[in-house]
Image (cartoon, rainbow, N blue to C red; front, side, top):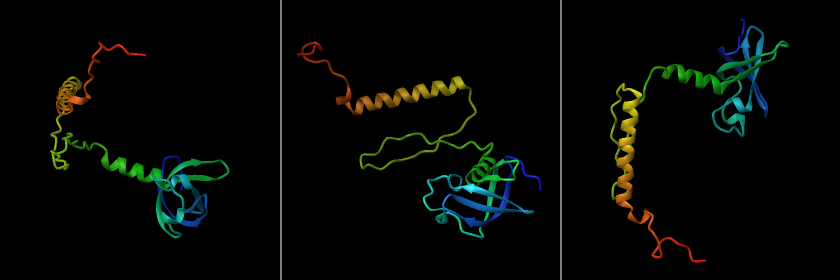
Length: 154
């Protein structure tokens, strides 16, 4: 098996250290996943994320001439997620101000293929509406001129 940078392969964890995880890739090849490439979050203790003999998917980051292979579990998961989500456009829900009791109501937004100009006009319109709502609900937040015409007394 010829490994190339960017390949995603499965391997078995053969060893765990404080700085990383060693993964057997088969055919006599093994590589190391640095602690920073184990998970998307900060990893204090690797053993909280993986165990010896676990089978994991890893992405090949580097293959050096001396045979050392650098791997990433984190980037393999990200690549897998992005390939699953490719071409999927998620609907965003518009912001709704909280109700008087403090709860929120979310309504789904229809996703339509529009031009950039139409999207920009829609954004400006909704932005202006929200801004005017905020001004109306919070009249104290408006700037007021001082009684002496805005001059400072020093």
